[in-house]
Image 1 (cartoon, rainbow, N blue to C red):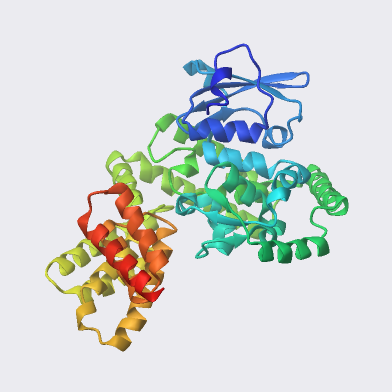
Image 2 (image 1 turned 180 degrees about the vertical axis):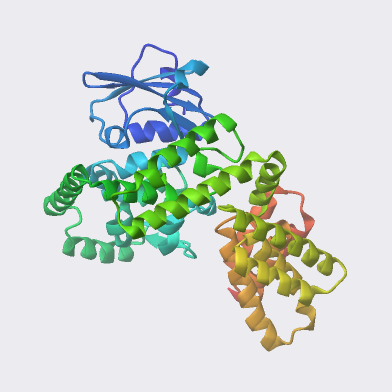
Amino acid sequence: MDFISPYIDSDKKLHIRFEKLLSLLFLCDFSGKINVFNGGETFFIILSKGSVWTDKPMNVLGNLSKNALFKVESAISGDMKKGLKEYDGKEFLFSVILNMPRERVLEVLKPYSTEFISIKPEAAKLLFLQEDLQPFVGQNRSEIFSNLKKSYRTIYFLLISQLAVILPASADEKAKIAEKIDRSDIFSEKAAAEEISEKAAQEKKQEALSEEDEIKMFLNANEHYNDVFQLFGLKNKFDEKVARREYIRIMQKIHPDKLGGISPNTALRAKEFLQLAGECYELIRDPETSKDIERLMLKYGPIRSKTEYMKMKEYDSAMMKATALAKIGSYEAAAKVFDFIYKETKNPSALEQKNLALWKLAPKWNKFEKADKYKEIRDDFVKISMIKELSFESMYILAEIYEYFEDVTDAIKILDMILKVRPDDFKAAGMKKRALYYSRLKS
């Protein structure tokens, strides 16, 4: 941010990559206006509270000239947003990168291709990245080059938004990766030409869309919403005006009267989606239900329909029951309920509570049971840490398990994380001292 500060509210114009400028401004929670000077074209983009407002298509924003200039102003007024579309900031940045020329992204990543990448746990909170992150889940470091071909745009987004860091490879690792690069054509002009050709063919195909193709594209773009609020362009809070506008837009596009010339399968799909949209709209219009959905989503994650809402209410009751069982010492019964909830909802909090309940039974385990159960609890805690922060109680247990398996380095790493937040934590300090002592004995 020190680099950009002199340019804010000044007459100076920045010459910087657009996506890098966006990332730097998001990281410092900047609110204001970016004036874009792209050749003979001038327009502006608004940033405020992690959101972006613009009327420019993503293919234009991803293909700004290398000579584009930017002027940053902190003053904005409410009427500036009128007629502009709102985007989530990180999703917007990711979409810009998806539309950038291949060679421009790889040009930045090429110097790092022989290194490794480490993805921060908070990246898993971005629902739109869940599928892209699957190859990296459970790994502390991943070879960059081996993931470039399919995920180079995702890797670039993670690095530029500081949701991942570069870890240097050893000399031997670099040599092996360099051999792979020599045998690959990923950085060649031929590979770039092939991607450009594929993109051009796709654009040509889109120009000749039939009425049915348009309906299918609309359904593909709208069916994969995260939750009942996002379906109507909302962020976890009901706004009658915005929701009604989006609901009318859906109705106008796929109302039965508009589906005369399309196949029965597409017509049925459109009818089911319209029915779902109507159900979701009525659901969030009720103030009490809307607030209850917000509460449940904070605890368990996205709710996409009335059916899911009713299920989440049941799971919420089950969580309270399991918590009560744990409080009265019925740890095995509590663990079973928490396990059921996790399998049904994939809620990491339920998995964490299951393992905390199981740990209460640890004194009863023999050495063979300990080896199996400790490994299972360790793996579960690592999985949870990829999605959310572990509680201090879970971190103590994880450090103890690492120590049990003589993995002193990871044990100390966990204890240092606790001490960074709680420097006067005697329990963590004592555990670290003990781990260091055993480490010296071994060496």
